[in-house]
Image (cartoon, one colour):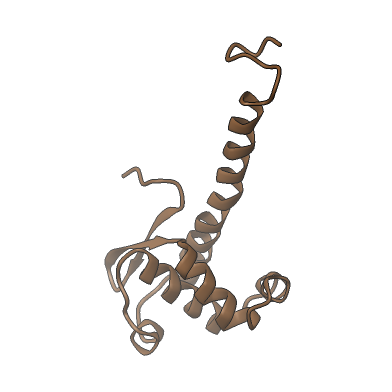
Length: 118
């Protein structure tokens, strides 16, 4: 199944669940793990703990439209490796979108026509 960039599915308790990195999810993750500091969040995510992964999954699930609650999520059947890969895929979309925006901006540069000739 194809999903929009940033949407990733993860099997939780035998059911496919949508993970989506939204601004709200990112803010929730930043507040929970970085105390509102994006640099602290980046440092912490270099060596995440299991509790960090649960908090991130909870935020991404909410972004995808489902909220299981932390306690239910902690008790869920989740492949930790698959969860880590799904989280990485959701965050990787941020870099892809930035690259697409930069590419689109290059086409609009002064002195360039749509064909790329100046």
